Structures are given as C-alpha cells and as structure tokens.
Amino acid sequence: MQEAAGSLGRIGPNAISQLAAVLGDRVGAAPVQRLFEAAGMAHYLDAMPEEMVDEQEVRALHATLRRQFGAACAQALARAAGRRTASYLLERRIPKPAQWLLRRLPKPISVRLLLRAIERNSWTFAGSGAFCAVYGRPARLGITHNPLCRGLKSELPACDFYAGTFEALFRALINPEAKAREVTCEALGDAACVFELDW
Image (cartoon, rainbow, N blue to C red; front, side, top):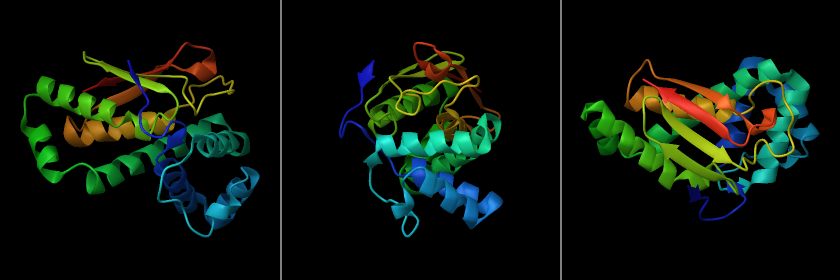
C-alpha cells in the first residue's frame, strides 16, 4: 500500500472544477451557484481552482451535492465529472507517446503500466487517504481513509467521481468496453473503497 505522498490533505482541482462544469452543462448556472454557496465555497464561483485544493473542500462539495440532488443523481453527476477529469488528464497530463504505447502493448502489460502510473500519482486524488492497485482480471484499486467518504453514511456507494475517472482512463487506453464498479465503500461501513476494473 502506498501512502498518499506530496501535500497530504490536498486533492487536484478537477474534483471541484469538473463537477461545476458538468452541473452547469446539465442544469445551468443557478444550481451551480446554490451548490457552491451551500458548501461554503462561493469564492470559487468567480474563478475555479487551478492548483491543489484542501480535501475538506472537495468532501464538503460532494456531500452537499448528495444532499441537494439525492444520492442517485449525485452519483451520475460525479461519474460524469470523473469522465471529464480523465479527458483532462489524457489531454494535458499523460504524454501522447505513452498513450500510443499503452494502446498497442499486450493488454496485461498495458494494464500493469497504467496501474503503476495511477498509483504513482495517487497523491493527486487520494489526499490524506492511502491508495493501492492490484493487478488481476478484474484489476482492483483501493482507497482507505478516503477523504470523500470521511464522516459520510450512505445506502449507495459514494465514490463515482473516482469510478468515472478510472473507467474513462481504461476505456481510452486499454479497451473501449472497460467497466469500473465500486464493490465496497467506506460510506457503506466497509473498511475501504474498492473499485474493480474489467476490460
């Protein structure tokens, strides 16, 4: 298991900005404003963050989303934000030669390389949590002490932002039919948030 490295307790800004973009596209500016004001984050309405943000802000925003829209709708919005985050990573963070190579190597090698890359960069999304990835079919990705779930009780898995990101990366780089599902979630009372990725 790899402890979150870098700035503990901080998460990449996509967890905020992509959620705002999805919500704005689907329901307009007024619900975005209400969401950010209710989460105590109205200061981002003038300019979305571009640097790492406090994980408590991310947790507050996603928890407020669930309260305002209900768990099922929040799941769909967060998953869409995760897909947009993957698109951002593919466009700006993952070098094009690496993408070209991953698409052409034998799948077992590509999956291992992608899992290692996700693990190396887990400090950007796991915050003060700890992340691990285990190769297999399906591959398993886990976050313990997940900042998005801290203090959250839910009847549905609550980490669709992560699931959407992982699934979209696997679809772009491994197989267009790849699927991600969260099989355990700390918000359900489980010991860790675990995602299964199959392709």
